[in-house]
Every structure is written in C-alpha cells, then in structure tokens.
Length: 502
Ligand code: NAD
Image 1 (spheres, rainbow, N blue to C red):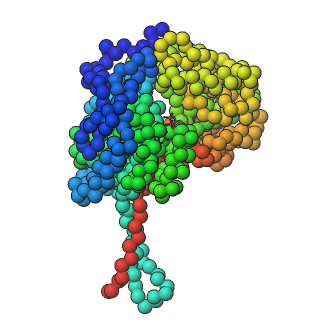
Image 2 (cartoon, protein in one colour; image 1 turned 90 degrees about the horizontal axis):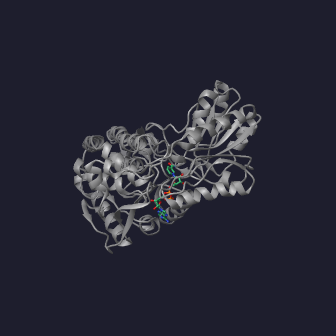
Image 3 (cartoon, protein in one colour; image 1 turned 120 degrees about the horizontal axis):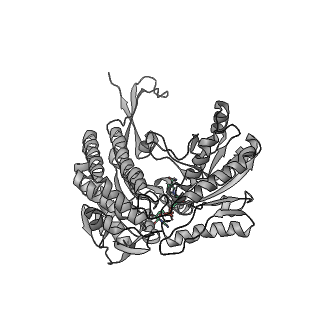
C-alpha cells in the first residue's frame, strides 16, 4: 500500500499555498505572530511537515478582536445595505466554487481526508452554505404590534421589534470538516452584519487562511473577517476570555465546550456549542437489511469515523444481530486504506498520530475487557492509518461505549424490543444524532418522538441540510447552527415603543 500522498500530483495553486509559513489575517492585512512563533502543518498520510502556521499570542488575539470591533461600527460595514452583504456573500461563494479543486487538495493534504470528501463536504458545501445564508441577509425582520399599556388607558402606543447583529463573534472550529466548519461560522456573521475572529484547529488551519484571502477578494471590508491561528490553550483561550467578544460560536469537544460555557457565563457572552456525540443507529425488526447494513457501515466509517454524528453504537434487533455484524465486518474488511489524494482510497489516515493513539487506546480497553474485536489495528508505517473496527460483547456502560472515540470504531448491541432499544439508545451523556432503520411508519414516528437527539434520521444517517437547524441536546451542545435558528442566534432583539399621537 502506498501510504503517503503524492504531492507532485497537486495543482500548482495548492502546492504553492501549502508550503512556507502563513501569517495571521488581521484587519485586512497579513502579519507574522507578534512573538514570531510558528507551528507545523503536517500531512497525516506521511507524518511529514509540509508548511508552518503562526502561533498567535494573546496580544495578536487582542489586535484581531479590536479590528473586529472597529469594523463592526465602521459605516463601510455597519451602514452597508443587506442586499450588498448578500452580493458579497454570493461573490465569495463563486470564488470558492472557482477554487474548489485546489481548496479540496489543500484540505486533503492537511487533514488526511479523501479528496472526494473534501471536495463535496468542504469546498462544495461551503458554496451552498454561503448561497443559502446570503438569502437571509435581506429577510431579517422584526414585528409590529398594538400595545395595551394597561396602566395608561388614555394613551395609545405602537410597539415594534428589530433585530441587530449580536456583535463580534469568536468562532472556534475543529479539524474534521475544516473549511466547511469555518464557513458555517462565517456565513451567518456576514448575513447579519456581525464581524468575526476565527480560530481554526491548529491541526488544519490552511483552508481558513485561504478563505480569509477570498473574503478580501470578494469585497469584505477590512476587519470584518479576521483569522488567528494557534493552539487552543493559548490562542483559543485568549479569544474566549477577551472582553471585546460578544458571542462565542464553538464546535469541538464537550471538554472544551464546558470551559467555554463557564467563561461565557462569567462575562455574559452569548454562545452556542456544537459538541461531541455517541450517536445510536437502530436497526428495527422490520428494517430493510440490504440498505441498513451498508448504511450502518458508512455511518461510522465515513470520514474515518471522524464525524460528530458518526453512528458509533449500532443497536440491532436480536433476530438480525449476527447477520448485520457479519455484513458490517465484511464491508470494513473491504475498505481500502490509502492517501486522500489517491482516488482509489476508501479511507484515509486519522488526522494525527496522537489522535490514532487515543482511538487505539479505546479499542485496547475493549479488548482487555474481553470484547470481541474485528479490525481496529494500527497500520505500521509513517502515516496515521487505523483499520476500521467492529466491537461486540461489551457492557453498555463500558467507557469505550460511553465516551466519544471519533474514529472508525463501531460498538454493536442486540435488543429484543423497542423499549429496550430506546433505553439503550438514550443511555449516554450525549444527544447529537440518532437514526432508526425501519419500514414501518409507526415505528419511525415512535422513535422520532422518543430519541433524545438534535437530529433523528429515518432510513439514513449523517444527512445535513443547510435549511435544517443543526445542534445537540444533553452534553452534545447548546443552541443551533444553520437554518433560521442559526441566523437568529447571530442577532439580538431590540424592542421599540412609540407614542401614537394621532
Ligand atoms: P477540541 O475541543 O480539542 O478542539 C476544538 C477547537 O477548540 C480547536 O480549534 C482547539 O484549538 C480549540 N481549543 C482547545 N482548547 C481550547 C481552550 N481551552 N479554549 C479555547 N479553545 C480551545 O476538538 P477537536 O479534537 O478539534 O475536534 C473533535 C471534536 O469536535 C469531537 O468531540 C467532535 O464530536 C466535535 N465536533 C462536533 C461537531 C458538532 O457539530 N457537534 C462537529 C464536528 C466536530
């Protein structure tokens, strides 16, 4: 197996962008980190350093937040009409569309993901996101009402509301869908007239930096979009603690989400948190197994299991348990591991050697507890490859079942009736996604009503659409991205009262 990406296959545009040391994008300009510190950019397929990014300090973050605050009040942005913001967003969408193939290449080299995946879910979905959100720019509205004011019965008042931008948004993103996550944060900011300081994951910052250049080219005024790179501990922390930030929009782990919620509470910042998951995939007695078996396999193995909604717990009616487990294991065994740039690869490496060690640790703990594990092996060599796993025979309370692994590891359980399936399905701290595979409308509806998750899929899994709110319950998050809710959460309401003298 060729494990490393063949970088000579890259387009010139992608190759030139990946190499060298990147700066910070603050107030429409590129600058080096104030202390001159940098971090490596690594290709997970080889473990090799391919470039460097700046490590922003608290002073750099301060400069970025100040730029965002200045831009928020600057008439060039604050007085811009909604249709003009819409036009800028549509221009940005076109620029991303025109560069989709090189953006996908950059993402593949930086994240390890398959090129088909980075093209579809990073580049193309970013274009759709901007187009969808651009439409909202001209459709934000308040309400008018005839007021009672009962203690002043002889006077008449008109009441109304209007929505205003929430302000400076600190956006922090993870590494699993890097460009698209950045655009999911950016698009509602531009649609509502907010400004943003974006901190991408230190593992996958490259496409966010190219996005900053494209914002500039699309006509976004200086200071509206700022990108600071660096570690969570230094750059991320400085950003969430900054008093000039009005809202934190975070996607990442539940552990960091808790830190952010505490910080936001202390300073009364608005926030929404898109966190981890341990999503159940339930195969009912009347499921169509021809669809459910590949559905179950790809719900967990897609993107190497590095999906927040990955179907990591398969709950299978006891009648079908052996057949489904065998079917999923057969698919797992047929998955061709390889570098993301190779179109023949079916699964790329995990994002880093450290992450692979964490994933392998979860599988080892399952083995030590006596579970049956098919696959789940580290592939020796330079890239961070890991073979897809199916685990059976674990107690549902085991840490490997309860904790998010964020890798290609499926834990499977049999159930006897719907009550048992629902009890197991809801028995984790998370509540992000869930799917029910059934041919029965009543069964589908029963599960939809009782599964504690932000999204419930029926005969499918992991399908997101920009018009639907996306978010989690329990420890999977607070608030929603996308849809109308994703827009409204970037606004604050102001109530107006006018004396009617007529
Ligand atoms: P992570 O929480 O370790 O890091 C996410 C981001 O937070 C990174 O940019 C990181 O630098 C930053 N960060 C880390 N510590 C910080 C701190 N103390 N203060 C401020 N920022 C800090 O998560 P990850 O490993 O990058 O990503 C994987 C996680 O993301 C998984 O838990 C996955 O479920 C979750 N995720 C959730 C969704 C969703 O929509 N719910 C989508 C994708 C990923």
